[in-house]
Length: 453
Ligand code: NAD
Image 1: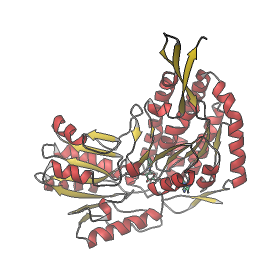
Image 2: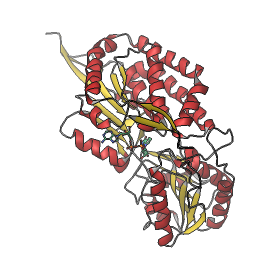
Image 3: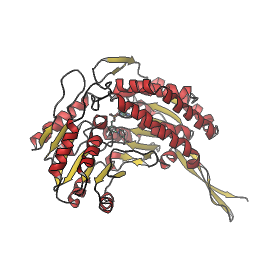
């Protein structure tokens, strides 16, 4: 039995039967049998289904936002934002899927004509995280369905009610129930065992590595969208108040539980003290509370175990000489609350500056020049995003050019666009979603060599 509980109170909301190994194998068989007809449909019909899904999501937005808030503890305004943000992604995919997958005639003269077509992979497994279930799930299952694949969708066990709601709406919108299968529970290992054509995973590096090991030798398409330890550097020529507001939001939005949350801040020594003061003022202004309150900005952590990681990072940072500027402890009560925490005088000897925190905690480090900032920003096993705040675009670009990350930001952070590929380097993963490449990734290119005789 899977217990869905409310992270703000610890109360059990619902108990759901986990899918057995036999049920998962059966769902896979159904998905395989149905895929060919789904792929053979005109693309416009698949687009119509996803547009009906969009309309259903819009009609039920408030109810879906309440469900998301109840099971993951996301502050209600941020749950609504996530749902609204999904629409831009749906629109991008629907507007571009035909163009992205159109067959191309590469040479049309001479003896041999050469074409490329884009064929659906077949049946894919989509194993997903809880922190933005509509985004990280939608980045996979929407283009996968639009390009003619069947999907075994396993939402995180911490976002099961949302995953089930997504499944119900897709089916109501016309996607056959055999083509989109929701698998419930902590059963990702069983899903990965099925002879699928692709595994598209979003989650931690630790689980990603396990999946890579479990699928080694299978010759399937493997995409792993993993964690980050994303840095931002504040140059000495910035408007300090803008940088402080933007970065406090980038570090603490979704209670710090975004893959691209800012997790390390480096500040030029000339403005360090002023920046730290401005940043702390922003953090002190955050409203901590129950996630159903309209004013709440910081809610509970979704997973109770994450509190142990934060406790450990706090103790380690203190032991190694960091200065605690605010927070640093759990809040009393049954919910998974941790006070927004800021450390200064941090170093890379501390876990806080090396391991993903995935919570409302940040370290701020002073640097002497841009070269030192570049070296520190790249001193990580992760590589999801990196940002620079500066009034000088050339200076910012020269720094961003040196970042080993999938995305870079100038004067912004914690941002994902449906029009741009989303990917990571090193422990942040392999493969990509979003952008035109994030549609084609659910297809394999087929090369045609054609001679009339
Ligand atoms: P997680 O790795 O704990 O779990 C992710 C999913 O994997 C869940 O559905 C879980 O049931 C499943 N799973 C667990 N063990 C498995 C196994 N052995 N085989 C197959 N599946 C298994 O991650 P999480 O806590 O759900 O998500 C948080 C992590 O996800 C963070 O590290 C975050 O940075 C990352 N993330 C990355 C992106 C991105 O786009 N790069 C986006 C969102 C979240």
